[in-house]
Amino acid sequence: MNSQTSASASIADANHGPSDHAEPARTHGHGHGLDAHLRSQSHTLVKPRRTALSRQLRTIADPRELKLPALRLTRSLRVARQLGWWMGLILIAFPLFLALTPWIQVIEGQGRVAAFGPLERRFNIEAPISGVVVKWHVTEGSEVKVGDLLATLSNNDRQFVEALEEQKQAIIRERDTAQREVDFYETIIADTRKVMEAAVAAAEKSVEATEQKVEAVEKKVEAFQAVYVADFSRFRRFKDTGATGVVAPLELDIAEGKARESRAKVEEAKAELKSSEADLAAKRAFLEETRAKMNAEVQKALVEQQKAIAKVEAKNKELQDVLVKIRQQENREVRAVRNGRIFRILVNEQLMQVKEGEPLAQLIPETDQPAVELWVAGNDAPLIHLGDPVRLQFEGWPAAQVVGWPSVAVGTFAGEVKVIDTADDGMGRFRIVVVPAEGESWPEARYLRQGVRAKGWVLLSQVSLGFELWRRLNGFPPMIKPFEDGPGIGDYDKGVLGDAKATGDDKAKLDPITPKRLIK
Image (cartoon, rainbow, N blue to C red):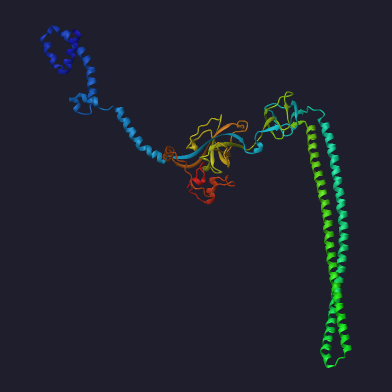
């Protein structure tokens, strides 16, 4: 009760001031000690009250809040007002940020590390003969050089080599027989040609003689015809004048007889000419028949000779096959054909039978031309060209890649597209081969082994960040510029900075990561 009275007095003292307490002090002199005690307590209680009140007065922004304190409950917090200001600034600056921030479009692909040369990629070491591996001279992971002994094989059939030798001798005998046939027909052909040449020469001489005879008979016919014409003309003249009595009948008879005799000689000469021409035709036919007959005999001998030659060639091929098998049986040692490391041994010693051509082990050759095989979607393959720059991230290699800003990437490596397959893998994906970019290096071969998985980004055109977001929201493909005088098979390794200097364009803004054909 006393404490409540003291608090009330303190509040009253704070509201009315010290003048209100002076009068009771003068009236009640005997309570001077109690009043002093209450006054000291009232000052102690009023001090924090005044401090809180002054703080409230300072926070009043609207004078109406003095009359209506409830208005302060509807006022926004200071933190909320500051947050609103910041959000407004962000909404204004964000479109500008999207419009001005550069972004490089990329095509992403997954793949693995390989060698650029096909002969430097992993391959199988095959068995040269059928048999059993007697001993392995290497283990998995062994480093080998060209000519190093890898394994020794043994044939199960010990008489196999002897059988091959017998087969070789039989083939040689058959080949020699066929060769003798070839020589025999060669002799026949030569003799036939000699006989043919002699017969043809004789027939040609006979034809020539007959032709000369025909010519002589033709001249004889012409002479007899001239005599006949003269005699017949004389006979007609005598006959025409015989009626007048100028020519005696005896002379007319003599003229007629000569005309008849001349005509008989002409007919006889014509018959002889006809016989000579028939004889000439027969001899010419005989000449052609002789030639045809001799040619037929020669062609027949040539056919038989070709059969014999084919038999000889077949026997030679069989002999070569047998000799190869014999050499393979003699060469039971498997040696390395390239420098590299043994990756896997596929056949155990003395336990597994192998056939000729079956794999014994796998070897990974050494290579100084590393490459990465990346597989990209068929929708993106038409956008990639030879020489396009690529950023690569290798598995197990710490890296931080910002897709649109390759310049700030850490732990990635530069490359360029070297090969683009013309056909897919049967699943709609296309393979591209990436090699180190000019002047760039990749991790050493002991760290970057073949088969290590890799992730790559093929860099395309540079656009704004806002355009890229809009494109992805709408599902549009990346934008590329027309391919004019771009890098081809032979000029993909030309640097864009060097090309800019060659053209003398000092103002060209070239990004070493962006292809030159994509920059205006």
